[in-house]
Length: 280
Image (cartoon, rainbow, N blue to C red):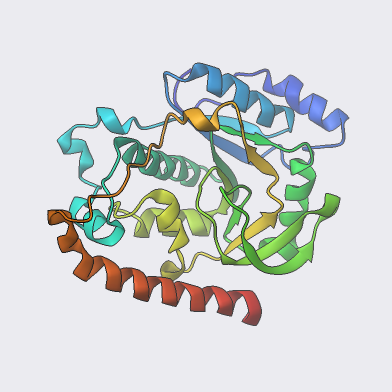
């Protein structure tokens, strides 16, 4: 299937089925960009089918294979800043993951849509997702956020700002968990991320974690209405984070930059999250 193509999984029939169940009516035009490597067709078939049956307009984004990039194609990767700011060896899959998400956001910005969902191909939506999102996209709620997290690796903590259907809550997080499996963005957030998050100097989920300096207002749906697929999340084809450097090595030269950076950035981030959670 070519990059950027829509449907491909019997979308009309899937949308009709979702409408017959009373779901997806307000979400037909919300594109769902699914990041998928060319060699992982089975994952595309499984993931796209699930979201199409919920009534979403699925769009495949051919994932960037970080291991296949040449030196000339790494111009948007700031290797030295990554070394000093993150302090771990970079994995080729992390580079591919980062560039794949940026590619998906650029594809969204090239359309006239106001909002879009971006997800990786190892997640699965809950049956209630269309109804939950329909509430989040109502005018009284959608003005509160630019990026809406629907999935994370660990539960997060924050202030509930709205009760949603089926026991879900709209939460302004104080502490955001890692992971970038699925989220909804508006045009403002997508534009700011593309503008400020290149070149790459942190893993994508960590860079989003520090998203407050450029004004992205983030909220989360609790509990997460999109879950990692247990059969696939242990066989990720995009990421692949490496371990740490040995403590006693030349890499320890990064600490005079890394430790003050983490201390200041995390402190400022926490203060900003508290401000957003309790004073906005």
